[in-house]
Image (tube, rainbow, N blue to C red; front, side):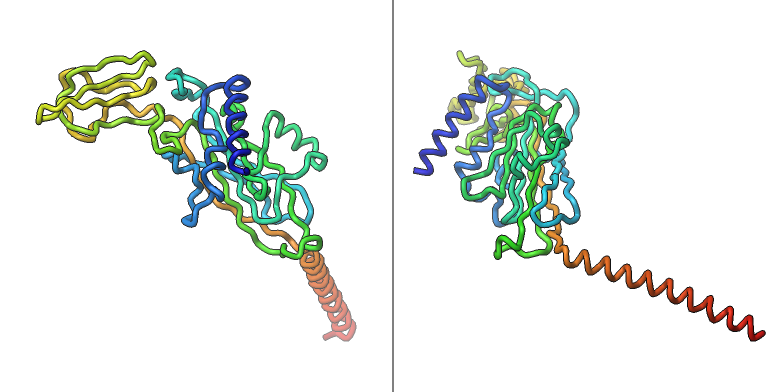
Length: 310
């Protein structure tokens, strides 16, 4: 039943995204949601990297420590060159889109909107957050969004309270972040998208290049044994070969149209026990008081010595 609901939700997202948003990206997060119970593999790799093969930098800013039951911001930075355009599913140049995934420790989750500050409301305007699955509210997804307007994505996070949840303890926790810009090079089915470089599966001579009705190119290669083989290149990538060229197996047939990429980074946050903070403040106060008393005692001794002529 859950799979059926997820499939219906996925279809609804495709429909809504097609008619209500730019058709620049088919790299929607639900592909990962449908195929992986957990988006982070045992090796530490976030599964988005299985389809988004190119690597690019992703950065994250989180506070060093937070209090229990408090709202804080995790800022995911997805840098890339401004006004970059990529190949859309229809082969046209379209604006690059971005998305992000934040894996929080158990107990942490997206802060409810009634606890957002005015600054957070302004910084998250036009950004829609979804949790990875019904039972994983600590994993938050965003995207696809227009890249030029969302190179920094603010995630409002609510920390847990160990007093209310006995499974939560004060201490240091890990946060895993993934940031993507652009479409993937591989679909979850294993097929290449038109945002990928294509190579020859057989060597030989290019005898013909014909364009299909959908804009794709069908390349015929005659092998050394005289057998004709074909390669179908979807609309989008630019061919780098011509009729008459002799190519080896694995030779490039197109350029690489991809201008985006995926990156991931790990960070840490401390769920601070207020008793430790109070203890530290008390320690500082005691040290300060001791220093003051030592200075006063020294002054007193100096006065006594001066009076006695020592």
